Length: 486
Image (tube, rainbow, N blue to C red; front, side, top):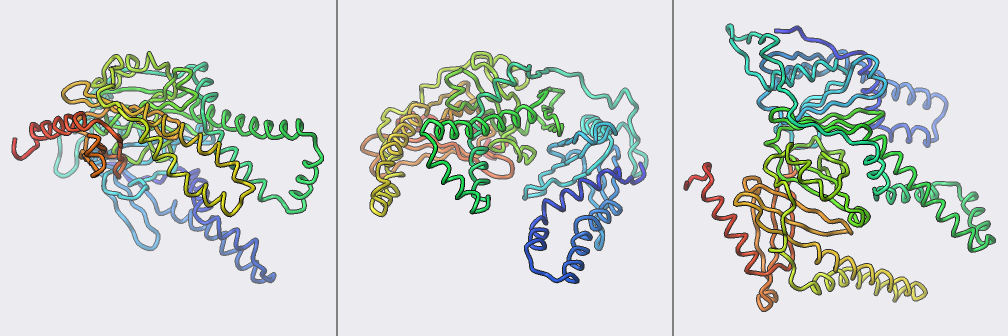
């Protein structure tokens, strides 16, 4: 049994950063409040205790042990907590290494189990040696050989060595540039820049508007284009550093991703926790025949990823995606199958619904602000095109007797899901009284996503195709070994 250890003192910096993140509003209140000299001094001392003193106490009272059977963590200042986490209960292990930790071979370790319903991990070790994660991985894959009393004997080195790498992928610089150039994340960056404009002093914004009214139209358009370029460039650089040296590794029954320049983020997830594979294409990547591959996992480890789905291939040519991914997830087909069995027969319903969503607010806008009524025309056109896009990108079909593929389209993004039947939580077929005449139906596929549920909706399918899929799912559930009727 190993002795309890403290994390490295550099972990205090991360504790302080976390305190600033959680209680930043206290600093804002202090700076904006009208306090006297004595009141300001007392408040400042209290804030120093909150942001520095408390994290130091938390670090000093936290110790951990990595034993052959479990991870044991002792923590708590006023109330002591003792957590015993068996390796069999661990879902994912996430490693984060900031640049200032690399020279010391340290990293932050986040351990997740199924016991926490919120978005926090079961255990967070701020600064531990990089060997700790490797040791945990070895113990997770190796059972103790013998036990003496209540303490397990540590296996020898040949016993605990991890399995060899079965598949490996690393993004090349050209693909990383493609990924950055085709990312639509510049839109949030543009909104941030516009938000910063509203934070400028009123005298400055008034002067900017006054100057803009005197500029030629070409210069004004150039300024708008420059703002968009700045937002796009910022998003491009952010994407490059976030997915710098992206790597995907399959080792035994584990998938591991690693990415990042300033912070190296490594996530290890068991293959059996994968609920579905998602191929994602925004409009620009559809034109360029590029795809992003993500997995839906029954874990919170991908909470900071796009759509909370773990990215396993940032960008890849669409015609190479299936063959490249098959060695990592063997139940996927090697070629892209046809998905016409669940195609939408009548697209006008999707277009109608999209128009109805924007019709009411646009009608109110035209009534209260007649001078802005002209804006209704381009918005209505965009809504109609979005409805058409959703309808044309709704498809799906059975790949094998135990694998389903479905495709949806929303917000100019095409999503293609591959879902094993054993991972489908439930299937919901719905038909309104108006849809009976047209022999159409809606189908909802429920899949576990993190600790929650994700609905994959296929709207306005042929009733016969929807019923066929529903019957397939019902039959497969009856044939499962865990079914009580089996």
